[in-house]
Image 1 (cartoon, one colour):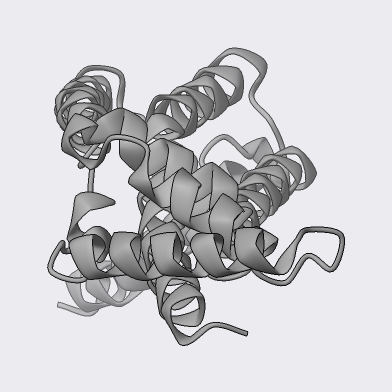
Image 2: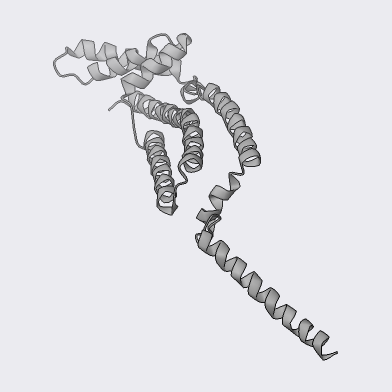
Length: 223
């Protein structure tokens, strides 16, 4: 294996990892509107249908499952998935026209240097061309050229959507009292509209009032 070709393959692998991480970040940012929509839809369903503990737990588990699946896909793209060297080379050449076709030519010529079907002179010429391309590309920051920053537009969009989501959520909590929806989740024994609980509270209050009033009446009679 040629030293020049090995070096370039390693640099292309590093550039590919940069691209994959940017792709994973863009995936997470593009999913932000769907996450906000899911949360708003869950609140609306709870308000309209007065879901019980089982319904809220089901929505919560569905949201956690979706978030876990999304994070798993993003992690796979960022740290596991790989592209072929030819693909990342073509990607770099498209986004950086100054490279021309030197990356693709270097990869193709490096294969010809070890092709037994070719004449020795052809393999020698291919080897010399690989060395020339490697010398030309040695000073270029291939890894930095892979940073397209394509995630910046989804980041701005996600920031606007997140701000609007927070404003809508705070407005809904203030106007319609949606804070009562989260209370049964945090305090499962709490029930705001249980007639039996209200009746028990009233009975306890009446009994306490009667118990406090009897000593006062007895003191008045004795005097």
